[in-house]
Image 1 (cartoon, rainbow, N blue to C red):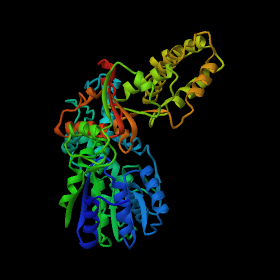
Image 2 (cartoon, one colour):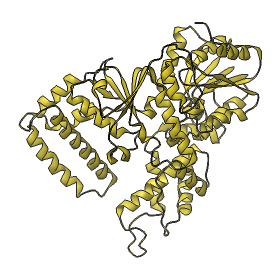
Image 3 (cartoon, rainbow, N blue to C red):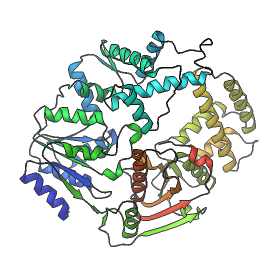
Image 4 (cartoon, rainbow, N blue to C red):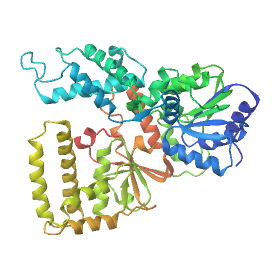
Amino acid sequence: MVPSSKQAAIYHEWETTDNNILIQAVAGSGKTTTLLHLLSLCKYKTLYIAFNKSIQIDTEKKISERGLNQGRAMTIHSLGLMAIKYVHKKVEIDDKKGWKILNEVEKRRPLYFDMKSGLFSTYEEIMRLRFTLMDMNEVSRVYMENDPENIIGTMVTMDKNIYLNDGINLGDLWEVVMEVREEFYNKSPLVIDFTDMIYLPARGDYYIPVDPYYLLIDEAQDLNLAQHKLIDNLVNQGDIKKWIAVGDRNQSIYGFSGAFASSFDLFKTKPKVVEMPLDICYRCPTLVIEAANEVYPVLIPNKIEPGVVNTFTNDFSNLARTPGAMVICRNKGPLIDIYFELIGKEIPCKLYGDDIMGSILRFLGSYKKMSISRALVDIQKELHELEVDQKTPLKQMMFAVMQENYKNFVTLYSKLGFSKGDSVSSLMEKFKDLFKGGTKDIILCTIHKSKGLEADVVYILNEYLIPSKFAKSPEQIKQEQNLKYVARTRAKEELYFLNTAKTEDFVLIEDV
């Protein structure tokens, strides 16, 4: 494939200068192709930092297929874990570590109903405080910040729920959390969670036992501050001659996990950096590009085909005729509604990143020898028992999960035309026959999970949900605008705006 003029300019800059390169790559501009070609130009050991495990696996496959033996792909978390294991000989991974820290905090500073002081009036308030402290622990590490006021300010920007009470000093409690956290870091074996994989080596300037000559960084707009620090540590070890970072400042959408709108531009503050564009979109036809440019006027078309852009309101007939299409939405709630609508029409579909079919089948497994009528009675009885006994987080979770499964069960049998006299097992078999999975399945996906995906035909469901009603800060509003841009750049041929009636049910579910 002949490189574009923009790609050729990047390759020339890489081969003829000692500059580090920051590539602003618009959606569909061929950044992966560009990175792999840059890797082929690297004559010595090169490390490719992938955003997540699936991208890392896919990149490793492409590296192998091209015989680029000088290249190696790693996630930044695996890089951090390697650094930790180099320093600490005994390491255990425990995703429940945060709760264990909080349990120890509560031993030293009990969080219970104090009837004399009246600090708590409900069990819910205690749980809100616990989750606030958990989020503070997470945000502190992601943002490399220990000051409680700054942490809370960041949490407000991220739209985290914060429990505030005049009788509770969060600053004092935070000191206890910090004390316990450091004690955990000093234990042997060292117990870490996923966030620690970045935070510990970043704050401790751990040596990272890799020695690449070149560094390629993908999805530069999605890095948080701790990840930036870890990359800086790697570069400052002295082995790396130069690096390339690729991303799109307009596709920064993961603020809930610590990424921030200026993450991409933070690379511009590093030494000897030149920014270069990849602004030709190879994915989208001209009409789709026009729709995307209404959000950000940054895309230059490559295709001569106009494509299709249209709008439907409360009309799903076109969707039913487009197998393999992708439906994307700001929130998960409307997608679940569409999922069951498609089931009712016996149209194969799947909710991307969410095994809703498996969840329903596992739930119904306990009742498969019963009639639907008997199962409904038994489930309602179990729900009632759980509802009056929600005194622990586990009981609350069990109630919420069963309530959701019960709702889906009722929807499923009615949509598929089953009566209460039919057996649960027959319903399960019908469900399994319909949704075995295939290339023609309609894909239902939140916008957050759609980044990196594409389809010939894309439906944006209820774009009026953008911006979220919960977005208040400039950072949040910017990321909401980015969501609209990401959604409009997934279509390779046809883009449809599919709108349904505005209901509260749709805007209450903010699930990514």
